Image (tube, rainbow, N blue to C red; front, side):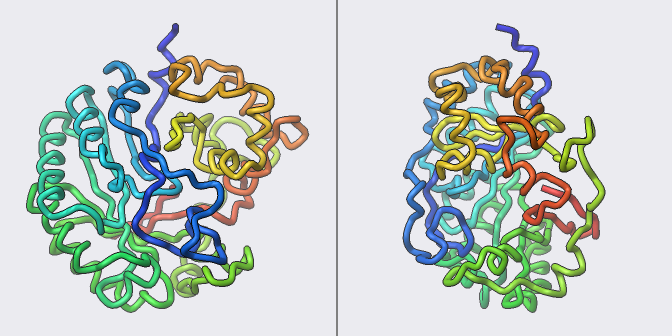
Amino acid sequence: MNTNILKKVIGFEIEATTRCNAGCPGCPRYDYDELDKLNSCVTLEDITINEFKHIFHSPEYMTNKKYHFCGLLGDCISNKDIFEIFSHISLNSENAYIQFSTNGSVRNTAWWHSLGELSTFHHEKHRRDLTAIFAVDGHRETNHIYRRRTNFDKILENMYAYKAGGGTGKWMYIVFDHNEHEVEIAREEARKLGFEFEIKISHRNVAMEAEKMTKSSMSSSSTVSEKFKHPLSGVYSKQVKFDHNIECRWTDDYRLFIGANKTLWPCCYLYQSALENKEATKLESMYGNFNDLMKHDLVDVLEHEWFDSVLKDSFYSGHEMHFNKCDKHCGDGASRRDYIIQDDGKRKKL
């Protein structure tokens, strides 16, 4: 087995669980027209600490990597083993970045304080951050409107407990019409916490109307969306001009996605397609379970012909394995890209 390919891998986005306590409109976890009904494609499952150790079975697989625990269907803090997973990375790798996204409303303050202490330990050992990204879209008056079933006072207690333990954090804020007036209040709260504050221009701001959702519809902030609608237009693939100027997280940036079902993908979009029995099912019909990390080593999957060559070839629309999702989400006409507006005014694309 040639593990040199691991040196190319910059990092992993990992869906540690499909469980979540919230019920956000627009989340693919729920039926778009019945917000308290799980989508039929959702199976409740987690990546356990033992499964994580099986996938990343040696320091060579973990060192010099960036880990973002976010995913598609769940909040990673709802995974009962998540503290152990973070600890395992921190203790058994070198030069590792860890960040995780959460609504911040589960676990108690003692747990969050301990996680803050782990964040401090990680920074001292690696000189790299372990960062909590709190997805809080409002302050006391409005956060619960989008982050349904969450409690802002509990979130704030957890944020301060995490900071008291020494934790590094960010406050990520999606701006809608209903919460635009609380942006500065939240920004000041973030300053008190010592957290960075970032505004997110999300596809969820605009997708509701375009996809004719009803009960899940949510007005976006027209002023913010228009101001930053196409902040990075014209930035396309670094390697070659494909039919739709596709920017691929794997072929361009060597970033990968691991779903809670322990399958490896270039991105969450093709993972979602497979869950929903859409385009990505053609991969299963041709290659079987080639990307199942409980049955195949990570390196073997990356050396598979689909990751090695077929994926890149499929960016041309005439290819038999072409995915329309690649055009829709990562082509030059993509309408569902997410952007971050940092406190210093700089912009970055997710």
